[in-house]
Length: 224
Image (cartoon, rainbow, N blue to C red; front, side):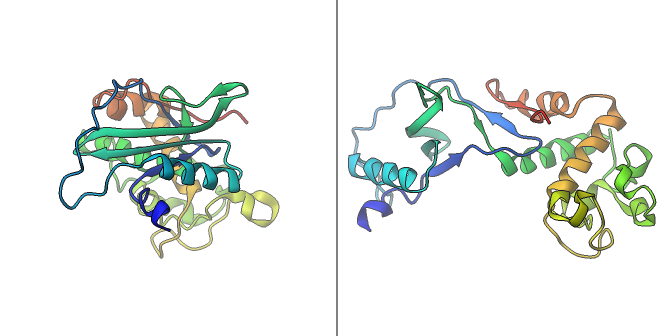
């Protein structure tokens, strides 16, 4: 167990496929100087034994591609990659990972910044700009607002394909209770792009990714 404990602070990103997938990629950083011992109270950086332990975990769980990193004081001080980014091409600093539901935080940050700019209100009804046909005849549609989507209280399931028939439907009224929902986040993105007349990925780039210098990151929906 001592081997595993050395990687307790490592972030693992595993590619998967969900709507609004933000694909994150950083340019290869210059080699870090890591010869100095860790500061008092800090865990040392992963060694070869830790890397071997990570490789065992990845193999055991059938993970195709994985990236690990240690960030200290805002700087990437250690990184390690396993698997392939595509057949025959090893994963590395330039590999792009689909970060799946982590994109919910990016969607939220985008909408909150737009609200701060006065371009939309968190409490305006979304029905004026977007209405999913599956709930067109449900009066609860009128109570959907950006705020209910952001705090996961739209009343939607996580994804409609979990429901019988695969159609979107309310499980509770908007604002009544917390219920984690990818559908709610997707609904919010569609409302935002229709209200502002721009594709949501373009808004993410203009409002969040561009201003903070994430030039090797993009946002978009998978085909299908």
